[in-house]
Image 1: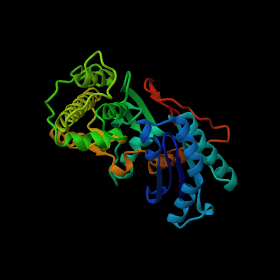
Image 2: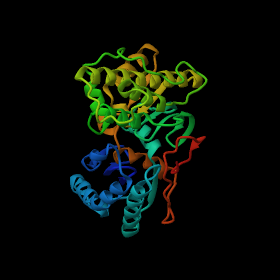
Image 3: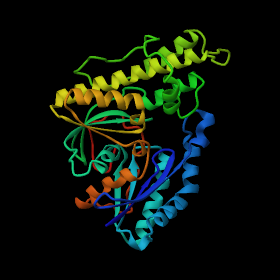
Image 4: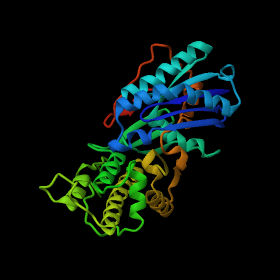
Length: 350
């Protein structure tokens, strides 16, 4: 069975073809980083217009790479939540049109569940569920108890900014390039993680699994300019200052992520951990997470680098919906937003 999956939740236009055996026949991702770099973040209107231009060429290239035609496709899956409204609409419209044209089932994909399912794709015969799932990206920092691929219960989430958003904003403060995650990681390589004392919100509060990074961003701003100077244009930081601030900031984020994640494992009694999302590509985070997991005898599944940032391969979670008979019709809607606070993730919805 071949499923065509489509991903347009934010600023990557992606498509993939996967089988019911989790074999990836082809995957194509068209990045929009160059379009948004001058703004230091994703501009929703620009993102949706770029999706309109790229969605059909991306799908066409995916079919070519897989050496398949639309006649070989058994179902069409699309991420319909959460995400930017305009971006989601482009992917949904394309998926509906294809489903109708080839008379094949339409399947909905929850983008957050898919980030965790990226771990399942590369786990081989190892069953990753039940587990604690950590999703860390530009829009989300969330912990879930995952009984199965379609059964998520929220344990904790950001009460303000997501970790990835904090990386982007701090990178801009330091004069580093967008996206902020890779540029801060690179700058931090020559920095001292203890050079600046930065806050770690809710650290050590095992009964509270929420995250907060807004105060951390503000603390970095004060280290740069002081409380009364919002204009950074006249401030010049030396290379070592930038490196030390980047390293100290990165370490503060990693400390909080690890503290809350292992607290969630203790509270649930689970010994399996699945991690996905763009921030999961951070080298310092991956190293410390692997060390801590080994020390605590936790079975760690972390998405490979190519499946951390948004992609359509993780839309293979649609296979689980296909098996469960959870098909959609043309009335399928989008459910945009960041989905920071809620009790659970229903199949196909945020």
